[in-house]
Image (cartoon, rainbow, N blue to C red; front, side, top):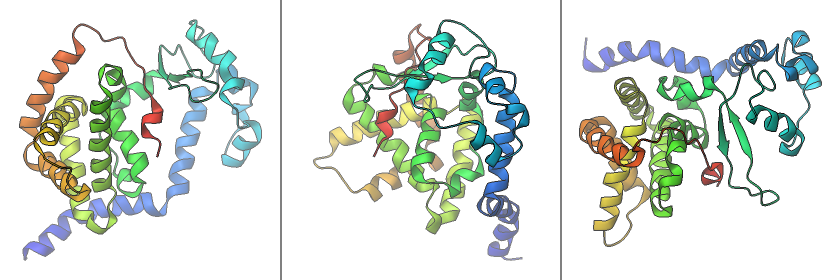
Length: 267
């Protein structure tokens, strides 16, 4: 058996799994919706909106109208005061804080324990078939960017956005699927070994900042994507070491902040 056939045999199972996300999108999304409905069925919102009778997307849209933040603000304020089982099951202790682009006021976006714990879960193969913007946001969550974003300078924030953008474009490049799959495998190894992508992202920011400071002029996006790819595949240990040092400087003794400026990821 030649190398090409051997590689194809090895990847055949993975490609079938990826194909599932491409061809069974509605079915998979329906399962996720049902899971969320079951988790919220006993909340005040779930009882008011008849979640017990919701069995598909159409029945969900009929019982749950689209709401503005202002319409939900009263519920969120109660949750922030410690009430449980309001919009989500149990108490929600963490809130992402928006930049306040509407009415010049910041919004507090509930972040459940389930959502917060996702940073140390492996990236799913579905990320290969999504848009780079969604992939970029997923990487930011895995890197716990929201926990230290406010401690960064504007220049450093731009560096993190660049890193997440370049990485997400590698992952979602359908013309280079083998490279995308290789990158996904490497990132999931980093997540498993380091409980997420935080130290990786911090380490990449150290290298990226130094690289920009040394360069006389900014290079092409393709150049930086290549740098990111090579570091993910071949140089992750050194990157993690730098990131661990940077995390110690950023974190100190503080573990309480969870403020995430979502406008950073707007186009």
